[in-house]
Image (tube, rainbow, N blue to C red):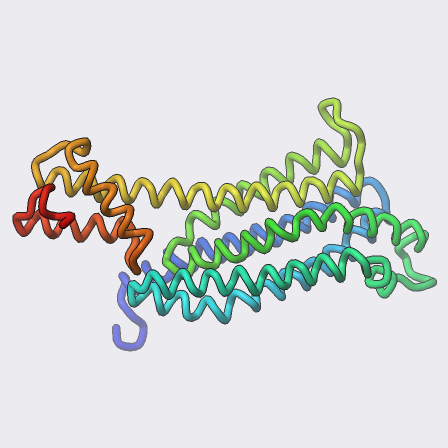
Length: 288
């Protein structure tokens, strides 16, 4: 029966990867919905303008998703082979492609936003004054352009983390971004805590700021986790050799050098040093 439905461990592994990804994607979609809900309280024209721009931004996000998905297949394969160079190469390819999409987005949305928004507007619609709706959409779009870069960076980095088995950090970064967006929306749209009432512009500033914060939180948390893993690995090396961490500073530098100049990460180099220590090598000969 297990042949057809799998073991408990199999489902644990699947859900450990799938659930954080599902949560992150759901949370990410909430960001634009928050803008629509909170802007809707200040007027119909404002809501219509913001909703139209969010539709256009969704197309931009779909383009980013399509770009990273193809390269992501190879990232996962290279990671399974423990091929660090391959992972780096696919990461660079994602950066280049998403960078091109971002520049294209700047050009299209920056110079053609009024034309694109006007396609959604027609006489007899229930969205209020068309010229006013168009102006609110234009205002929202101009501020949202600042979020194109952090969105592209977040897509590239989060996808690479997921493809290498790390799904929790992107999910937490998305949670943080939604919380930041919610708080800034409340403050900037309605002018709370002494801030001016910015309305549509405030919603766009909050969303772009949340995108930038989410990207920085994801990158920072990943860097901290990587550093902690390296420190743990080097502590194990010191314990195996019967020395303090300070006594193997040269080995630490050696492992970091191997991580930057070879196909292996610094943590993998530290693990190799630990195997050498188990085999009887000491701190003086392990880096030779």
